[in-house]
Length: 66
Image (cartoon, rainbow, N blue to C red):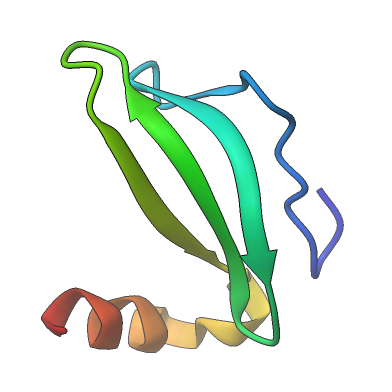
């Protein structure tokens, strides 16, 4: 992973629980992916925030509160 891109490939498993289906988009703060939960088969989306844009976890905390 470079400092400003994740570029997760299709079918990559994250945290042994989620399977990436596709990248939906990306921008200044991070990238959005569609994935499936392995145990339930439920389709979800998630935003992965670039580490340089998430100093001291501020961005992740803000999005979690939303």
